[in-house]
Every structure is written in structure tokens, then in C-alpha cells.
Length: 135
Image (cartoon, rainbow, N blue to C red):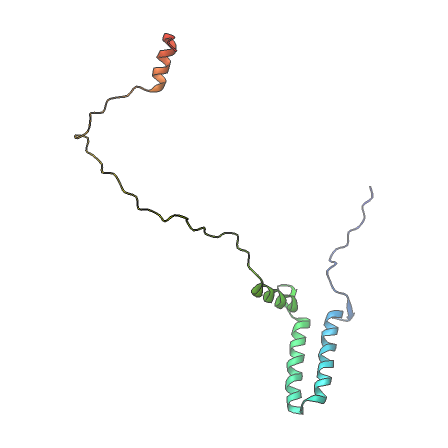
């Protein structure tokens, strides 16, 4: 059976120019289009404020990574975790009956009870019964 080479590192994004991938390019183009429309809608000082804010957020989304994952995936994952239901594997079960305190019996002294006698073991009794063939 022939061995065929298995592709490695297939999760890397293809680059458009130098170091910019398709995803990063479209983030920056989207920020440019949003700023283009804001230029005609907002007054100049407010436009500069929003343009700096939009471009800084888009650059962070395009190039930022947290533990090797893109920043957008990290943000969406954290929002999904905080909104979604949690599945706990262990939950304490409440007892259907309330616990009752244990009443302890009084310990009697040996002098007050019957005298203890040495007991013969069951094994010795069985051996003697077998030897005498009474069983």
C-alpha cells in the first residue's frame, strides 16, 4: 500500500500581501468604509474621535490574538460562556428526611454484667464434628 503525504499545518490563513490575510484585509476595509460614511455624517472633531476608535478596535480584532486564537473568537466565546447555561456535573442532593441525633447507649461496667466465658471457635467445633462424623 502506498503512503501519501498528509498535509500539515492546514489551519494557516492564506496571505494577500506580505503579512495581511483575507480576514485582516476585510476588517481594515470595513473600518475604512465605516469611517468614509462617518466623514459625511459627523462634524470634524467627532469624526476624528470615532475614526480613531473604530480603527483601533478593528486593528485589535484583525491582528490581536489571545493564547493563539483570534481576538474575535475569544470575545465571542466569553460572551457565549457568560450567557449560555452551565452544566455542572456534581450537585449535592438534599436528604429527603432530616437527620436524627444518635442516642448512645450507656456502657455498663463488667462488674455489673454476667461473667464472660471463653468461647470455642466455630472452626474447632466443625473439625470435631467432622472427626466424630456427627455431621
